[in-house]
Length: 377
Image (cartoon, rainbow, N blue to C red; front, side, top):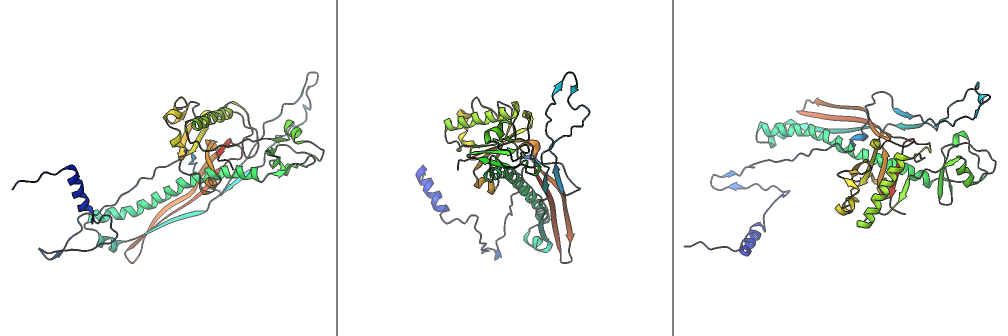
């Protein structure tokens, strides 16, 4: 008998019929018996996959903080030069001139987070075929505790960036209506005021003497932060190019000029390029294709030299507010660990209980540069 040649279509049909009733990744285990030796057919192999959790946004990892429970940020103003009177030297030369400060800002601990896994020695041993397999699964329990913490910390860092953005957006949204006779005391310096569609931050004190919004901006009683750009997510080459142009413009403004684009409204001199980070939501990246990137990007850097980070989210709150990109001074956003410990306790009933506990303190600075890109309302 000669073998029958098989065509491409016949082979495809045969494979389809063979796999039609195949059980693959079936959650139900059905034991089968070997009719030849009247024994249960054995599990031939046991597989499990580990995943390395990469430390994302590692520049947000701050120094360990084992003592204290709060971070205090002191924000000193730049001084105004005194009038120079040639015949008398500096006016008030014998009078002390004290520095001024923005309001101090405080960041508090998130509290403790705990991960727990309990290992039942006899149960795992019964399920494994040999010592090597059992040892692997024993080790996997402790490994998953560590990777669980890394997953948490990665998302916490993204949410911290988002919280930074939301604080700025909430400050703008909740600004108080400005009146010409409003009184701004020392306690109200740093407060947000609005006039029409404009929002500014109280930079100096003000008496009840009438002063228009325009005059208050001119004499520095109020300063405009300008840390938000409302822009739709790019969807094609043209809008992608416009986005990159705006990114580069904001980088230049941050690194080449003075501004008040921080939560406190304090004066920020030009920031060093190597300290800046541009963080972009992954949903934007596909549009920034080869044509869009050409002439604007070199690998993962803007031509301006600012490093780019891609994230899948800025946390639920910021995502809901439409935040899709941020430009920040990397010194001003940190997640600092206060305490971390993993312990293993053997119990009397053939179990080992693993506990990993961590306490972190999130920090974003009221005095460092911030810019946010968000979807229009």
